[in-house]
Image 1 (cartoon, each protein chain N blue to C red):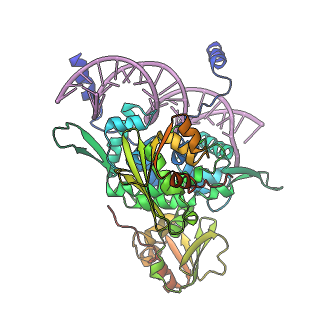
Image 2 (image 1 turned 60 degrees about the horizontal axis):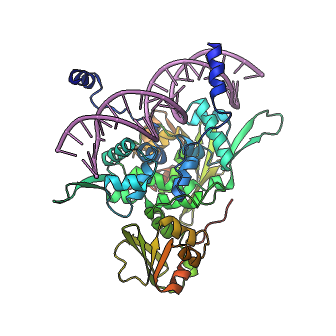
Image 3 (image 1 turned 30 degrees about the vertical axis):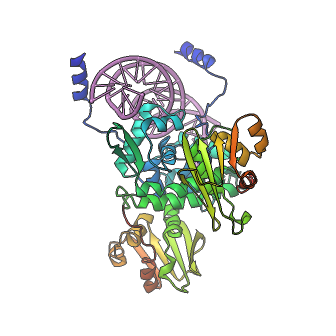
Length: 233
Length: 233
DNA sequence: CGGCATCCGGGAAGATACTG
DNA sequence: CAGTATCTTCCCGGATGCCG
């Protein structure tokens, strides 16, 4: 057993994952060399609102397998888009976080999302992570629908809280306490998406116990109308 | 041999390409379901300046194999991002072209390119297609370097010609005749990239016969300075 | 328990040869 | 020229197990 293991290690290449490349000077091609593998961009999406642990990533990316997640994180670290950080004691664990450059992939996620939302094949009723929902708010926000409007809208999505800040025709979202929010949505990300993008009335969702609104209900109603989907092709 | 083959075919599903999906309502995830497979985005890149034939695509995407190109074109057609068009007689051939929606992927190529150009791993001396070069001009153009400047710059790259139009702080590129251009660069795309992005003097490239400048030489020199690369991380 | 390494089956990608 | 057919290689995904 031990012998066989050593033999295989010695026979194997020292550390050559080969890494199929497009061998193309085009920047977009290089981007695909860096983050074009399956799951890579979605891992970055999940890290877009701050550090996460390995298991958080697994939970938020249903379908990814542990070994693939390991490979993607190693690759993101290798190219300088993410780093692994050791948490201070007593939390004997690490988190993964994007680098400054890694965070700059966000506009790509927005553009891709807006483009694909026009596809007839897009199914908005599929599962959705909290990070995806928050990103969609930043992406789909229609400034034309709110003139000089300010609001702090909180979200409580399974242990995590986010704060969406609408002011000056901008819509920003971040992890954060919801204590001083004007209104708080509590429920699954998919449920909140059903209200905002699926047009499902808040009352219906509340009635079935899937959603809870705390605070300014009228503001909640108004909020759901600020994110129009682009027209289908 | 024959028996085994028939058995396998009979056992196989009738016609289910399965199509691995992320099963995620997030728009970016759906985009990856649509065009996230290897080569798909680069095929779109090559079609960004107009229709091309199958063999043109193969030639401009060194490394892609015929069967993969077939699959990608079929998929792009299936999702509504491209279509196959029969050329009028006597040209008994077809071309592939993007749909309106397909063309709208262009900003994604630009953002990805700008992002990846900051990677230390990016090697600008690799081969480059004509379409990539033209896209890079639209992407990397720095309006701040030209105030009220107008120019028509032509490119002759192995049988194909492009016209880059600089006016009103904008830089546009398209396929087109170079007859009324102020200056024309004739050479390989990689050579022209060496001049614009690699800082190689035009004279050096001309001396070794890799490049030919026709028309306003001073304008050619100025043109090469309009496309600064973003800072490395 | 979290973070991997390992083995395996299936399927996509790559290379080559062949055909209408 | 425009693909198809076939074979090989490698990646992805799932299961298991090691180890701190």
